[in-house]
Length: 475
Image 1 (cartoon, one colour):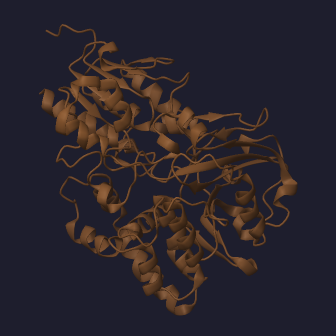
Image 2 (cartoon, helix red, strand yellow; image 1 turned 30 degrees about the vertical axis):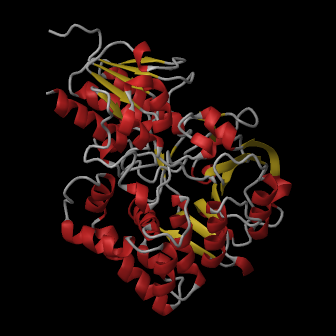
Image 3 (cartoon, rainbow, N blue to C red; image 1 turned 180 degrees about the vertical axis):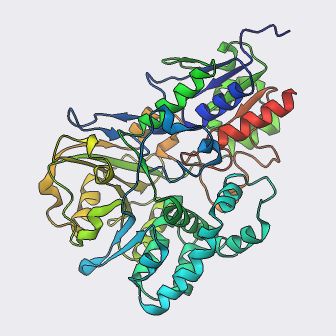
């Protein structure tokens, strides 16, 4: 007979916290979920940031893993109001002279736009990966488990361990296929010469071919609301506007899951974590931040190449060489004059996010952690480079520097939206070296944020892994 009101308490209602709470509730536990913000969602929140009727996703829009993550797959999100919309072109990468690399769902259609040799090499690279995407996704998102398809995982790893720059240069000669690797690899927010960055690019591109990089109609908040409804339907309780400053303020429970980064955890734990354990967590490294702009637009972005208007995501930054240089500058603590810009056009797939005939878009560039330098001008210059007249269609804008990003979500330390540097050195040691990285030095307390494996992204796997570990240990 339990002597506490709750079997588990979860702090933080981002995707990982929500999935952790759902996993515990599905196991029959009575769970309380606490969220500091007025609404749940974390990186899945939406708001009218510019003008009434213009719905912007404050952080994540494109859910590359929304239909592929094992944490979401059997939740029947659609019956809880999630309607997925997929663009005709998942990724566009404009280049000078009106050229553009276009990643379509069909591998052959994507490769057909390349030079013959590059087309053949692209198909040889991507077809085996996409054919085994279910097992590869499971392997990538569960790094401490035996791969369900070890041969295919090894084949993927042979390419993934390389640098994005090295893979793109050695395999392709044309700007277009090289750009598709570079743009997706730049999501890793680290120099493209780093070992392992090819894995980021290949993984995101295989997801685009397999699932099309969908968005939730009405905004990412719809996904958060669906997860919240599932949790409440299982008997869970949610309290918003509940800031947790220390562990002692939490209701007693055998299991506590924290959707926070190591910095917040150490503050919350106080002297309950000391010595080697505290030193190890203090060494956790945060990566570069982002500077983000949301736009309300009078018309679609006037890309020189009209096919780019059909893409949900646009990687703006020019050639492999240009992106490699700009990302290296950021990693060195500088602000490039021509940064890599990640841009999303939600109303391409979901016109409901803006008044009739109007549009929304957002973009961010990478900046040194904690940067206070405004980047509006350079971001808009980069877009204008490939879409002359872009500024003429801007009705309004909302900007967020690294401090504003962290104010929105305390896990974005210094503007780091990935919950910590994701380079190879920290990929498998986040937050510390351990076979059970979700466990903390405090008994019954587990981390489930993107600071734990498998890292950043809206996939919920940190919550799933932490909850399963907690349940196994409790039993």
